[in-house]
Length: 139
Image 1 (cartoon, rainbow, N blue to C red):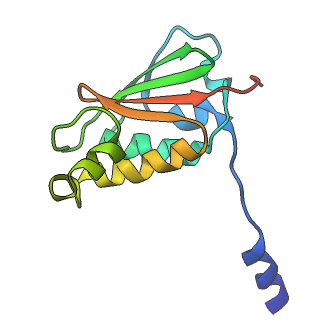
Image 2: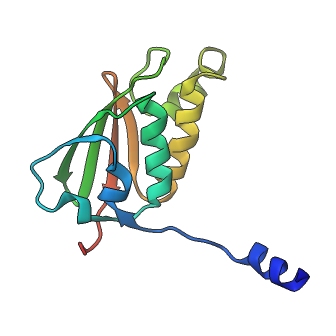
């Protein structure tokens, strides 16, 4: 029994792609992209979904989705209290720890690091998050 648990702990579960349907399920999606739910993105869908849910607040939000320059671009309103800033959360946090440490900006900065490492982009512009997700081959 012990060896079985040991192997399970060493096993790395990697998510390196998923569909937009996995990320957007339960939200109100606005898009003119055909077969949107089946579009494959080359990022961990759980990371992006958690980011989206974190800024959505208590319920589903309207997410606008478009395709630009090989990216699936998600735009959603920020429904949580944020100190005023525009741009990349990590930049805002680094520019003023006193203003942003412990706030939702700190959580968004952590999310930014996770999505940046996967080749995605993330910023906050005029009260909306913008997430650019690299696209793979559609299923």
